[in-house]
Length: 221
Image 1 (cartoon, rainbow, N blue to C red):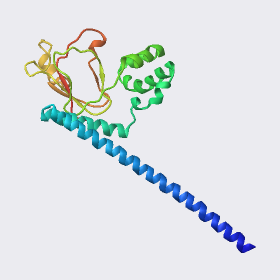
Image 2 (image 1 turned 90 degrees about the vertical axis):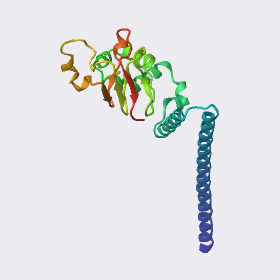
Image 3 (image 1 turned 180 degrees about the vertical axis):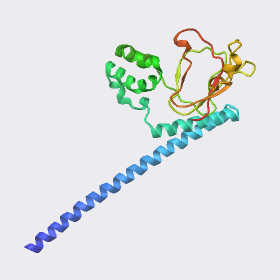
Image 4 (image 1 turned 60 degrees about the horizontal axis):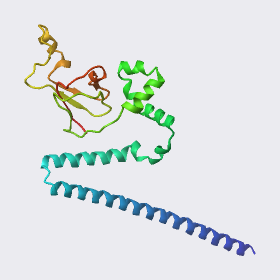
C-alpha cells in the first residue's frame, strides 16, 4: 500500500510539473509572438514613413529631421508613458481630470515666482493647469520660434537645452541707452544664450502683445 501511495504521489507531482512547465512555455511563446508583432509594426511604420518622404520629394535635410524626431518620440514613449496613450483616463470625472492636470504641470510652473504665489489660489491654478497648459517635444535643430513672429505663449523648459539667438544686425542689448555697452557685457544679454532645464521664457504675452526679438531652437532632443 505504501508503494502505491508513493507512486500516486510521484505521478501527481509529475502531472503538476508538466502543467506548470507547459504554462510557462506558452507564456514565453505568447510574449515572443507579441514582441515580434511590435517589432514588425515598427519596421512597417518606418518603411512607410521613408517611402512617403521619398515619393513626395521631401528634401534630404527635412527627411533626416522628420525621421530623427519620430525615432526620438518612439524612444520617449518606450521610456515614459504619455497620458494620451492611457485610454482609461478618458473615463475620469471632470474634477479628477483637473486635479490630475494640476499635479502633472504645477511642479514645472512654480519655478516662476508669479505662479508660485498664484498657486495659493487652488481654483485659479487648477484652471490654469487644465485649460492653459500643454506640452510639446522638440528634436535637435527644431526651431521653436523665429524673430519677428508673434509671441502667443510662455514656455517652461522641463528637459534638454535650447539656444536663443538675436539677429546679427541688432545690438546685443536693444535698449538705446548710454549704458547699453555695459549691460551687453553681462552674459544674460549676450547675442546667443543657452537655456537648460527649469528655465522659463517669453513671459510678455501674459501681460501685453509681443513679438519675438530673436530665434529659439533646440540644441538637444
